[in-house]
Image (tube, rainbow, N blue to C red; front, side, top):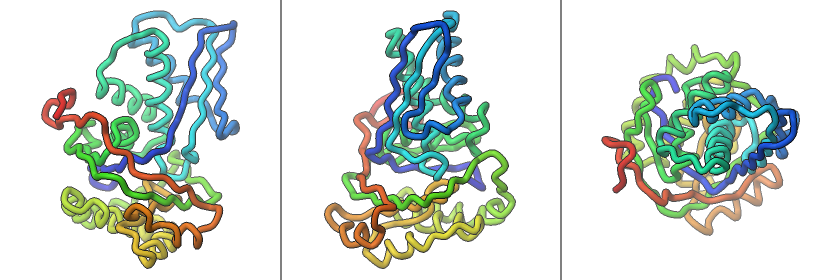
Length: 272
C-alpha cells in the first residue's frame, strides 16, 4: 500500500453474480450483506454496457452472493467487480480479454472510492488465482505463479474498515519495511505476508493477536489482510485444526486456489 507494489494470494472463496434484463427498474440485490451500498456494482453495469457499445436497458436485475465478508480487507470489492462484469459479458456472449476486464473492474472500484490503491493486485488475485505481484501505480502485472495447495484460516472480527476516509499517513512512514517484504515475497511469500501484516497492524492500530497466535500454532505465514481488520493465516494441509479450535466460530476455513492459466507479466495476455 505505501509504495505502490501489491501482492495477493488467491483463495477458494466464491462470489456469484446473476444478471438478467427484465422489468422497468434497475435492481441490485446483495444477498450476503443487504445493507451494503450498491453504487460500485451499478458503476460496473454501466461500464459493461459502455464497453459493449450498447445502451443500458431501462430495467435489469443483478443478484450478488459472496462468501467474502465485506470491508474486512478480504478483497470483497475486487471479487464483486470481477463477478458482476463477468456475469454481464456472459449474458451477452461478449468477448473481452482477461486483463482488460480486470482493469475495468479496478476503474469502477476507484470511481466508487472503495479502494486506497486501486487494488489491481486484489483484482488479479481474485480472478486469476495463484500468487500475483503488481505495480498498482500502473496497473501492471509483475509476477504470476502458483504456490500449491495450503489451508487458509481467516479470522473475521465484527467491525468493518471503510476505505473512504482511511488515513494512510502512518503507512507511508513504513514504506521501507514494506519494500523489504516485497523483496522477500518472490521467494518466500508467506514470510512476506507476516512482515507486511505486522507492519500494517502497527501503523494502523489494528489488533493482530490472531496472527501471532497462528504463528505459534505453526502457521507458515499470518497477518492482517489488506487494510484489515481481518487476519489471514496459511498452514500446510491438515495442520490448521488446532488453530481453528482456538479461533472458534469467528473464522473462515478455506484453502489456496492455484491459477488454471498463468499470465505472462511481459505480455499480460499471454500464457505460460
